[in-house]
Image (cartoon, rainbow, N blue to C red; front, side, top):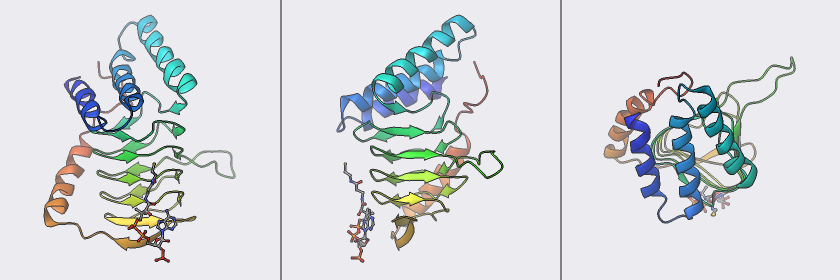
Length: 196
Ligand SMILES: CC(C)(COP(=O)(O)OP(=O)(O)OC[C@H]1O[C@@H](n2cnc3c(N)ncnc32)[C@H](O)[C@@H]1OP(=O)(O)O)[C@@H](O)C(=O)NCCC(=O)NCCS
């Protein structure tokens, strides 16, 4: 619970240079992660439906309230985003508009898992990231990319299908921080089970 409340303030702060719409969406998202789990089904259902109505139907951002997302998420432009709720997004990530992060339908009719996105990952606009793939910490995904395979830590990947075009020179501080971030990511609140 404390984490979720901290996340509200952290998201609010990192989105101060973006649109107030992004701040509002993330405030609704974090609040619904708390209120959507109240042990009174009528109330929790009300808050979840209210979130869906405002954020998904009216604002056009499909960011399911039960998606596992770390602190300090920056949503740039805050429009046209679709995320599957099986996706895991680490701390301190940037996600731009018109982006889809989700699963794939297999020939047998079943669905794959969804991506796991590390910490400090920057996603350009109009990106598609699909399947049970991992985007490493500190990676950058170029605008308009379609990512269907793992992207290593600190790589810049672009294109359709996305290919690594360069590796960022991560400072040792960033790499060390990455290790800390990895364990922090492992400690992300488990939003798939009711913890309140
Ligand atoms: C991926 C990105 C970070 C790379 O930036 P960069 O390190 O400055 O890279 P460069 O511009 O030097 O490009 C390097 C090469 O990658 C290519 N490239 C860069 N971005 C690309 C992209 N999104 N898709 C396809 N190719 C791309 C360039 O054409 C260049 O190719 P070349 O070497 O054959 O000439 C940047 O291009 C990008 O896409 N950022 C996202 C920005 C965004 O979404 N803005 C929306 C604002 S709301």
